[in-house]
Image (cartoon, rainbow, N blue to C red; front, side, top):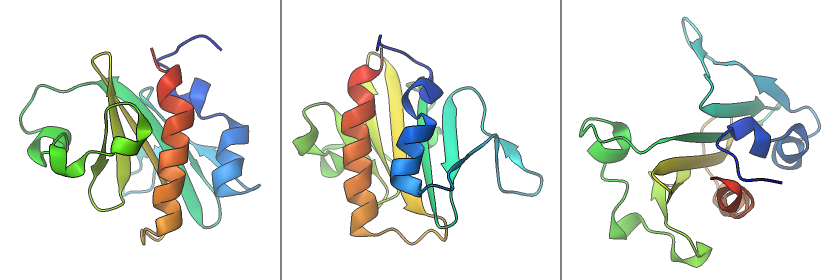
Length: 135
């Protein structure tokens, strides 16, 4: 597959089912009141108990952007085992990679928001699958 900047080219239904389960359904909005559109920069699936998301966006320069405000890109958050520039965004929340001026975020989590060691392992595995194909 050629490099892409379209998240749903990378997070296919088959990939989503692997992490979320056979009931994985692509979502076009996040739960909220009112619902918030997922938008073109992300691809998001939910199942009965888990969710998975891949987003690809330009690296923000605004100091108030969450990735900058929370100092995500710092040595303390770095994930060295991946072989590319990647960082944890919060304790187990998501994994963020920086590539070619883009920020690639991957997240596999329980819908209830309680992150487990398995979620973190799945984040790493998903990043290894997705990030090399971004470009």
